[in-house]
Length: 326
Image 1 (cartoon, rainbow, N blue to C red):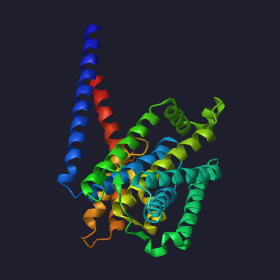
Image 2: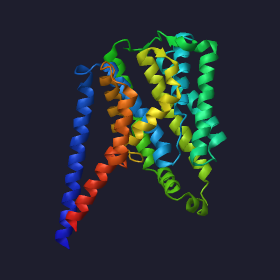
Image 3: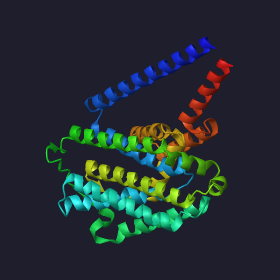
Image 4: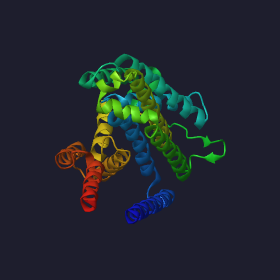
């Protein structure tokens, strides 16, 4: 028994050392990345990592398929762009306004559709998002099809000039890491465990006396808020708010990122969003139909990796380890 206990302790220490080394390596790579890769491309990846991770909170953990998350992403982008350009708000205030708008919009969406299930909830979110798209086309402050262009980046805390693209990258990186850590803490809290219980067996959660609708609504609002933060950061970095930010195509694309990486896993959306954004960037000048190529890859992932690339890989490695232990 003592030998078995020693083996378990050694294995635990080794895993912690490996995890610590991997975390340090990733941190160093992220800090050096803007000196090796075009920073604006990296910012695009970071924004979609935060966006996909936010969607995964409701899709992978609360079991809610939302096809309207582009409304939060794009709505926040328009509010942030207008606040920064027309109202001449500083960077921090403009981003906070856009993020708060997304959270409020998520509350409205949630109150309308949170008690619906399955495809009905998905269709409600899609219909509401299309209403936001229509408003973005018609309202004068959005610029219609031209969008809001030449959005000023301003400064961070009145000190760091965000027109320096490397400085902009580090600010977006900090906000993305903060958002990811917030999601990690949320998912590893009692609230996150309740969401997992609702996803696995909602009738049983109801029988235990849990207010399922309230927990779903909280998760949906949190997801919308973080999606808005991603949209606000992206519009400041790219200095453009356009209709593509509120299009239903974007909602489908971020769902695709989550599914490819691994729905219901913490790392899956990060991998999926980085892969899809990189693939689209590489195919942009190739002349190939991007949507067709991404669709074929998605079908391949569905057939070969039913739980996503990361989810399936983790499950197979776990099965191998358990078999070796047995």
